[in-house]
Amino acid sequence: MSSTREMRLRIRSVKNIAQVTKALETVSASKVRRTTQAVAATHPYAEKAWKVLLHLARQPGHHSLHPLLLERSEIKNILVVMVSGDRGLAGAYNVNIFRHTLQNCLNLPGPVSFVAVGRKGRDLLMRRHLKVIAEFSQLPIPFSYSDVSTVGRLVVDEFLNGNFDQVYLAYTEFRSMLQQKTVFRKLLPLKVEFAKDGKKSYNTSNQTNSVFTYEPGQDEILGEVIPRFTAWQVYEAILSSQASEHAARMVAMRQASDNARELISLLQLDYNKIRQQGITNDMLDIAGGAEALAQVES
Image 1 (cartoon, rainbow, N blue to C red):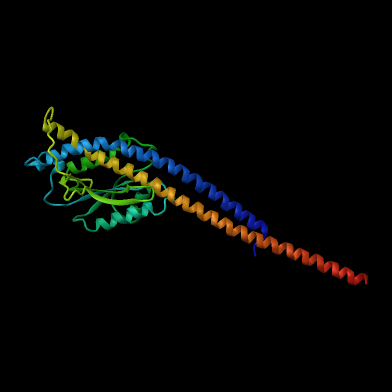
Image 2 (tube, one colour):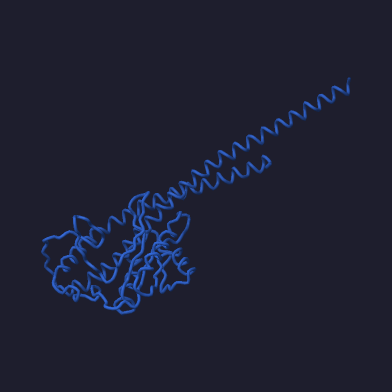
């Protein structure tokens, strides 16, 4: 049986861990709020750019308007941008996006290379000996579009140069503090679809009768909007993944704090039992000694 000193040390150690997990939970909750505000701020630009692309999708021969809209007849190489975190202590967040990505890659029609955004994802990919052509980690907190625009430019350049025929984006979509969904969707070539039965997804929308006037011209607008909108999608995915990571870490740390408090209660109960047993033994020793002295005196 452990001594009271050992039990006190264990209780003190668990209390210290509980303080750390509580602090991490509080910090993560604050970061989630800031990141979700940044995600909301990106929506107006993305919505306007998407309306322009939807209008262009209704034009005859829209596939030939820009190389990023052109479907390749033969798929030789595929690029997957996988967004994960730089740190752990977020439950199964990093493992879930990694497993979801590999599962979807099995159905792709060609060899796959990866761009890893996040140190944890890079380590998991390298551990499986998968081909990683680029890695982006230790992003500033909070980061801006200019901090991650390199990822979008890399993806667009690799596709335009013919190194890859399809590009996919794997990330974790933030829905609420308690719900995050892993997403795997095609990024390039950009495919615009129209929703049916009122259902909407990222690359779908309902039919509209909006009229657009392009200045200086349609080709010039396309040359700016499509590459920038592609990079903006990557930016939104990284923002959403970061919010999901903070939310997952907040939940994981809350569970860890609850488990620590439960463990402290059990340890405190064991400590009281050991202390009580020690006091009982001391009283028995005193009573035995007193009885022995009484027998000697008599």
